[in-house]
Image 1: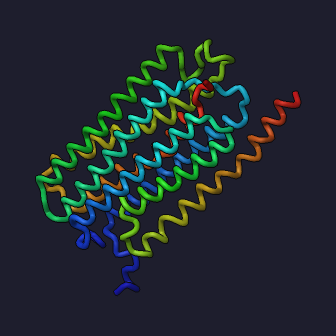
Image 2: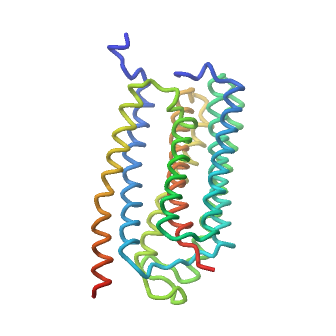
Image 3: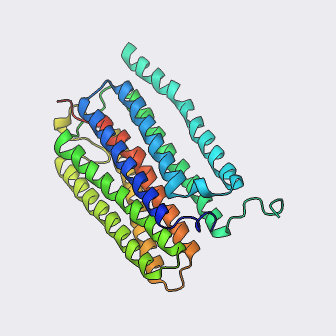
Length: 103
Length: 197
């Protein structure tokens, strides 16, 4: 498969580093939970960190970094755009919370 | 040549990527739905004590992350044609996945005993928010089902003598995806619902 042949032992080392990174990022997330920051700050920071973790998994563990550009362009932009479009529901959640506050 | 075969990816692998694309939308819809009802519900419970609940969930996360590492090692071994290495690393991955499942089921049993149901939260948690139970069991349950499927899938790939490098690789893609989903479930469900100290 593409890009596999060039790996070998250096590949194992790279994966170990990525794994350490993922564990460290999880540790930071749990620490943030321990500190109990305001909910919106927590949400923003946790989602930011989770996106970094997702990118590490997709690009290194799932080998996206070593794939053909055409495959990356087939999969990633569609995924990102469609998932982002789901945010369209949030203004309505805000409306509901204001609605219940005014009642 | 590149003009005729721009993706140059094996069909099974492209198929798995397309499955992952659609499955990621299923999970996204669930997680967005959860976030929606959560924002719209001011009295959303925060039941998870930092110790033991969140530490417990962190150990589960570590199991899953480590199983991803062993999986990538299996794919690495497979690329080198090391068949016994593949089986060894996949067994490691199955152990990680099974540990996650066992811990997760124990946690479920504990919460159900406490009185959490898909339609009700325990009385000690304050006002009843049925959606907490509904979203919790749906999202973690669907994820658990994916892990279980993954463990069976891995076992089949390891046991089959005919498994090619491509089979191991796409099995790895699925496994990492399951891990990836948990990277969003863990902070959204657990870390944002820590009991205020």
